Length: 305
Image (tube, rainbow, N blue to C red):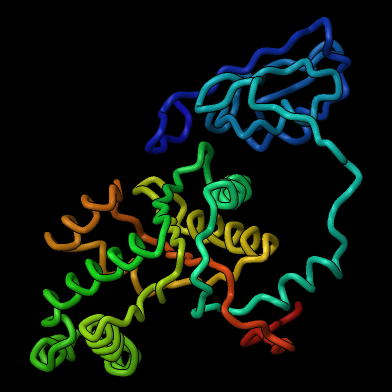
């Protein structure tokens, strides 16, 4: 049996057209499952694969003779497509310029984002790599400022019901179990978030999603590699930027909708199917202001060995 996901537990079926196969061995080279071998000058399925075919599709897309078909685990040969311009890719400087020009946008023009543009963003995000195929990333799309604001309002109501989580008595109770960094994090970040989000919403100001015209919530499943929703959200962010939109990653929503009966009610309302170890909200829209220059960023450390 192949590695299970929320979408499937089956092992994909691989067929090889021996008449087309030229024995080049590229399928042997790319299969991380050790699922192929060359026998009598032709590709054949190995009798000792590591897990069984996970339907990554590497063998299909690398075969020069189109001799391999993979079916199962949400993949079929119909999912193959040719590269329209296989030799054309964005050069490094163009890509770097896109990355360097990106800012976290929290002020948007009162202009809707069309469904066509949203679909383009999702199409790009679906190309993101994943731990185990098929992707276990789920996406909730909130289209329109009113729906995004309602999401924020419901989230603030959830926080308000759980204020005990940042209360003085709870912090005193948990102090023996928390390290100094965690206590500092609660006092300097978590507690202020509660005050800012709830207080602003009570005044009619959305400081959660900033009245963005579109919000995406990327989350995984219990089977999901924790990095998968984060990577998919990053792909979506980059696609949005390439389409002339501004974007902002919001990490302070996901952790508070994972536990408790109130969080479950919130998830049910927005058809969030699973609790997830990691998740991100991405807001996008047309920026209200234009930036004249960028800011250089650095890592904490880069160590070469």
